[in-house]
Image (cartoon, rainbow, N blue to C red; front, side, top):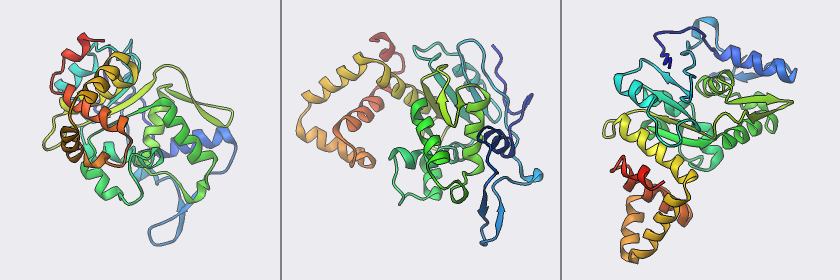
Length: 271
């Protein structure tokens, strides 16, 4: 098992690499986008501005990457044999702001946030995420093939995520569409925050995978929810005010995940 972090780069991905890879496939010229002062400029940064990225950490049944210098905690978590490890592409970020910047447009696309949430606010709160590979492909296909690419050039951080997934063979271009390679079903990411540890945030995102994969966990949670009083449910909704506009199942899912994250091993026993 080889776990490679940013300090041991063997293959680098730049924003320019992704543009060239993408447009070589669809045979269209790279787009231009307006600069901050309204000037026309390339969507790719200059060589001096290109971000250096870590090499892939794909070995055996542990697909994923560490973005930054891997801690001992990250090394241990990366190879943990939890039930759906081989089905999950895991990204560990040492900087939570960088994690958030890779997924802002995706969160808007899926409706997890609305356009009133600006990037500046988003990066202050997000410490992890979980999306299916299908959701990511839908986002990319909408972004590249159904929109005016020239006016919606993705950010360098978002292109970095695309680069990881292409280079690590999680997604591929088939004709003029992004599709899953079938290697994994979920893409998750975690970092640490001021009040929540990396381990807790990773456990939370893995539990979201378990909700999608385990009928037992899902049904047990729904049954438990049905047995609590309306007053208790009202209190739970207040603590989950961010999800107040979601449907009942989404609220139950977040409530169940937050309960289960406090007992890290017991959830596996019921799968």
